[in-house]
Image (cartoon, rainbow, N blue to C red):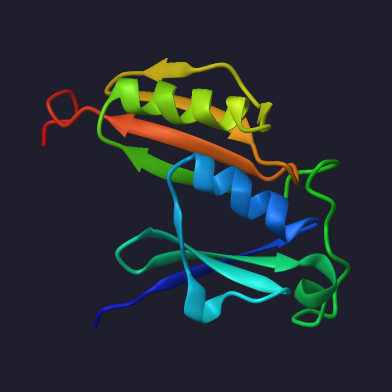
Length: 134
């Protein structure tokens, strides 16, 4: 069975979020984009739905977390190289994102992180296939 994943994130300013993620190289599906939401294409079968906070609230009975004040989720994206990790983090900071944690290295892995304009935490991870025995 083939599955797709849709991660839903609340945003304060949809246009600002679209601009931010466009500067990181992401594209959006216009068929699922209006004044309340957009569908960011991350990869084959992987999508992030950016939903205006009031619209996001209609999908849950719980209060919507304020990502700038707490951590509700950390989204991790794979990268093909250490350079790609550093490049995406640099693009995010240049586009108005905020620093999260310094780049880190563990055996076979290298990662960087940033916060998007709403404070959601993103990690970019390179896993060296040679070091991991793949």
